Image (cartoon, rainbow, N blue to C red; front, side, top):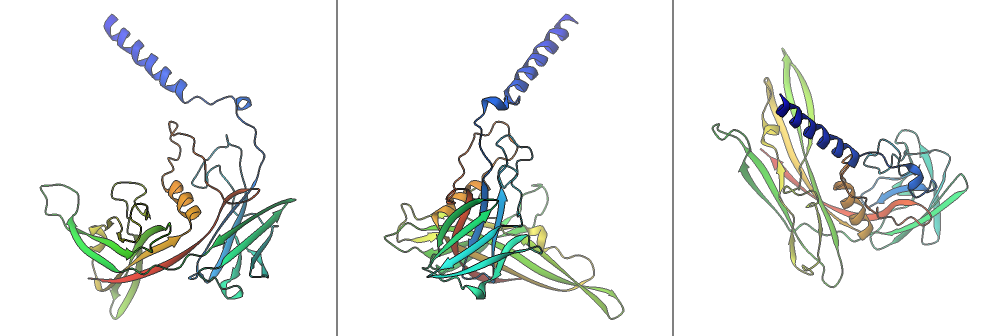
Length: 309
């Protein structure tokens, strides 16, 4: 009995020690920061609607820290948002449907090689930023393969689809890329005599290779070479047909994004964010918003369509 009590005491002490590691720090000991405007806007020549979000940063000790870092509320009405290019300016108005400041891209076409300036004023605060649109990079090749799905080794498992993208890097300059993809299918069901119903389904193709940031690639030490993405995997269970399916249309769309360095740095950090992990290290968030926080960046996308059977 004494031995059990001794073990219990050690365990309780260990748990108490663990808890002290994650206790809240007295807010008076933390640096006091004022609320700042937080801006997000990402423009590409493929856009049909230009959108900018405007929010206010939360204190560093704010609760509900999410992927927007600090519980920032998007997007606040009442701001004056101005976009300018080559001496011409337009206003982005608050659109309650998308909860962003928006304007049709036809009002100011986004063109590769050009610089766009953004100015936002809200509650007496003014912030500015600019972005340059990179040129598009063609996808040279997409290689498809299949691997046995992970699961019970005693069972006969279906095969996952895999994809790798290849492209030629432009020599003599620093280039930043992001790869992504999704698969889309429409299943046609028979619901009765001469009665049918279509059900769409969308899923992401993840380029993670077991690492959180492998969808982000630079040409560092690969300048001017034929570059390759990591392996994107499409789960085999997505291909299983439901009962009563009489027709199935499937396709995959793979994308290569050429982006600015700030886009690369910001989104790469977002992808690796540890959420509510109390042991994660504090991280300095990249920003190119003068007088505020956030990211305003340009990118250019090239797509490659693959029919799936």
